[in-house]
Length: 411
Image 1 (tube, rainbow, N blue to C red):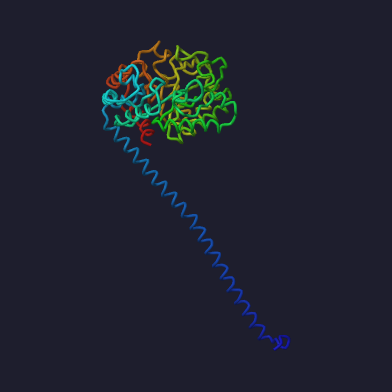
Image 2 (cartoon, rainbow, N blue to C red):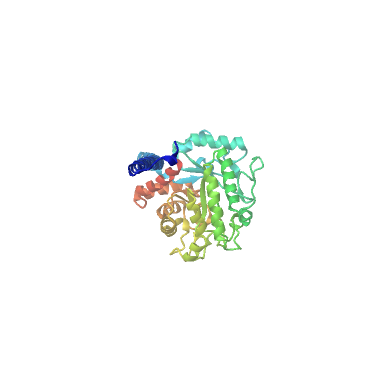
């Protein structure tokens, strides 16, 4: 039959039109169904990750709350003597009374039972070789009920590197941080932090008094000099942040030093008063930038230098004993809620003007959390206990510091 022989009357045309409409409606229905299924699947795929994120967030909240609860319970069950001891970060010689500590045995164990300090710092005289220091640190840690900070000054470079400068340790040597900064490549600062963090962790250290976050604003400065990344605040800020990340990714706490900035002084706090003659605006535009950058990078701690800042502090009180520097500026303005630790209280910038008891009490009153190396540890420790007893330091104030310390230790 030939199509051209079909005679299309009006009735046939109507039937064909109806059939075509039915076919079109069917196709449209199928198309709409497919589009609906696609949208539904897309919506479900989007919803599932969101639900997972909510679940993960809920679990993280539970874990955080659990840690906070555990810390609160631990603090509540500690004696005031235990609490006071946790505020101190001292040398093994300061703990045990020996002239030179190179091993940890019964003397260390008994000393930690009497004075359960928060941390121990090791210097070159304590570090002989890999096995010796690993065993010493491991034994010391095992004697403490509460985990110890085991710290060291390992900045890298030729000046301050207790391990890298010992020929018996097969670790990477780095040039001075001034040379690292001169490259302008912040990834090199990350490499410094990551490499140092890796070998410190291997030997049992969990805290490094680094990086040096000082901006070298005074070219005649000898206390910091080539330990600084340089005199450009932005460059030093970038370098500081990257070294912090490198260290802490290895599980080693970074300590930014020496707030509010030692690079603008002419004097050295090891030998007496050092003056940072800068206005608050100048500090905000220069010295504070690397500290702010390091804090934002997650640094666990900030070290306060013994610097007099006459344009900021209302008297000649060193920054390490000043609530204007620690509480008003570092805590409130820079929003740092980590551990604040003093520079060594055995430096002459402190010992020429304050007793060990006075300095220790003033540090805590100013807002610091940990007291590094008082000239006379036992006197400083007793000074804290006396201050709690006479009400010049409240137990709640000590609990605040312990909470910050334990959040890092038990993280």
